[in-house]
Image 1 (cartoon, rainbow, N blue to C red):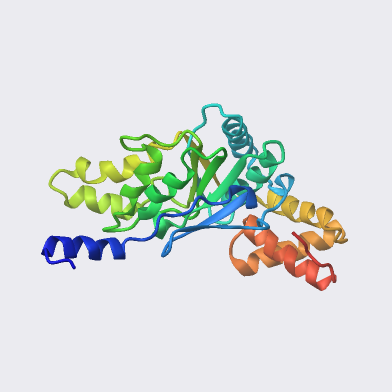
Image 2 (image 1 turned 45 degrees about the horizontal axis):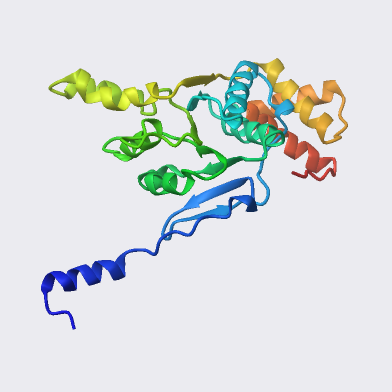
Length: 281
């Protein structure tokens, strides 16, 4: 029988504490998604990715990230990477495609997707990955921070690693529409209203500086947009002559009010459906 109040508190805390996380079976898949409550790494049997050759207009970013990932997979030094810029221009597609490309040569390479809202749990995730006989790309898609958002502090555990340091077998690839991971108006507001303007934003703005690679993605021109669609047609055996493709694709883009890789894929999906072609993979 527990009479001491401190003993009763200790016993209650022990009952509330989650059971130690069992070591994941990293051989079960090449890709995982991190979930919390309870903490777990769920294997992804088939990753939704496109072939690297179908990504048009991002050659420099592709080559840079591919070389960095190859180095990492070989156990050599590699940088964390921030892919930033225009919406729908293949940032997340590039990460997944490069993982597939490099994994074909280095079977120990894994990718783990982490949601932005789960960043506070990243320390627990790193403990599961640290020391495992695999190499892990930690992938955070659509990363950004707003007013009074303290999640960015958790990200430093990956970028800086704290006193333990970032595990040698983990690298972070993040995508964002914002180069500094926060809205421009937020930066200007804090600079204009703070007692020490530079100090008010330095901690948040400098977060992006902690990424060794900055890869910019910019809106595509019309020729690149049409080339994207033509490559999709070739890869999936959809027959359409150049004149019809050009007319339809430009009209489709006009109705969307934008031109990007995502819009190109949306048009192609419609085209394939009208031609009775089933898309796989």
